[in-house]
Length: 246
Image 1 (cartoon, helix red, strand yellow):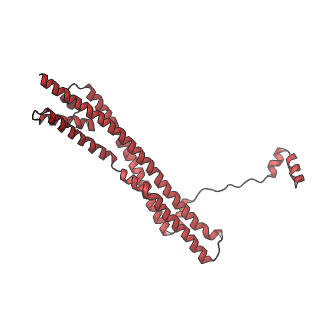
Image 2 (cartoon, rainbow, N blue to C red):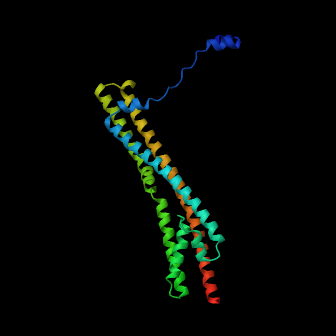
Image 3 (cartoon, rainbow, N blue to C red):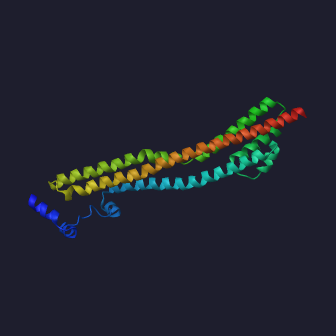
């Protein structure tokens, strides 16, 4: 044996390479569609449910990317106009017709000033309360749809686990029916189980990532809204100071 190994080592490299058999590929492509078509109807139903979860995640992702980007762009533009304004009335006029939380804050503050009864302390509190409501409504609107992401992220692994359990159970039933542990008997059920497990992870992992991304972006937008609220309250305070001096 050692002599054969020694002689093989002395062979030129091209000859040695020809002597070695080529390794067969470990596996080809995974026939997912064919596997699902041949699977048990319970596994197919679980796969459909998980597929709907993936579709819902992609839908929320596309919608939130557009919505949150547009909201951020509008907030930054409104903040720039608030910085330019010298009075609350001027700020409301500059932001007239714009759709953003900052523009709505300026409008509700101007409206509340027009309804005021001369009590400066009460006016500040009323303006702050209305601004807080604007911020709360905007944040709630931006978070709309994240409940779907949380549901998919929390339930998809367990739904996939149910399909996994069903596939393993099918394998044991096949063993019992055939009276043999031949790989051809147990392989289909195990393949179904692993396939559904993979689909569950494909549904859950993107949902978690999109949910966290939306939460971080909403937190950033809330900070921008806080800056806008401060800017509106500063304009109100300056207007009230000028009214006292005048």
